Length: 165
Image 1 (cartoon, one colour):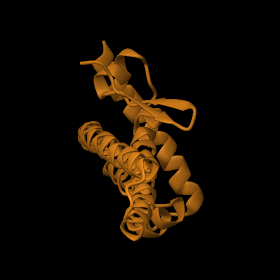
Image 2 (tube, helix red, strand yellow; image 1 turned 180 degrees about the vertical axis):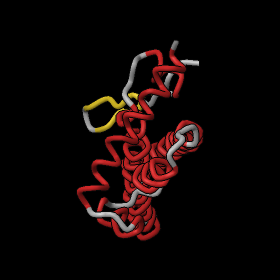
Image 3 (cartoon, helix red, strand yellow; image 1 turned 30 degrees about the vertical axis):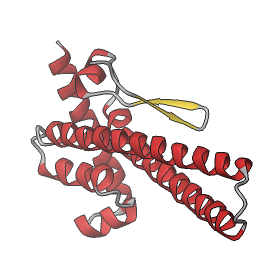
C-alpha cells in the first residue's frame, strides 16, 4: 500500500505509516507530529464543508423565493452539493488515516521502557497537551519536561532504527 499524501495549503505533508517512516529514516518527532497535522487538516476540511453548506442553504432559499427556474442558481447549487459530498469523502478517508496513525504511534510509544517517556509522549502527541500542562501533570519543571522530551525522542528513534534493520 502506498503512503497517503495529505496536501495542506500548497505544502505537501506526507502521512507515512511507521514502516514507511522506518524505511525513510523519518525521525520520531516528525512521525509523531503527523498526528497533529492530519488533525488540523481534518478540521480545516470540516470548516470548508460547514461554509459550503451555509452557502448551499442560501442558494436554496433564493431558489424558493424566486419560483422561476434560474439555471445559473440551480447549477451553482448542484456544484456546491457535489463539492460538499466530495469533501466529506476526503474527510472520511483522512479520519481513517488519522485513526491508523494514532494506533501505530501508540504501538511505538508503548515499546519505550521508561514510563515517564511514555506518559510525556502520550500527553504531547496523542492528547495534544501543552508543555505547561504536561509539566503540571507530571510535577516537573517546564525545563525538565523539555529535557525529558528530548530523551524520549532519542529512545523512540532507537526503536525506529532497530526495527528498520
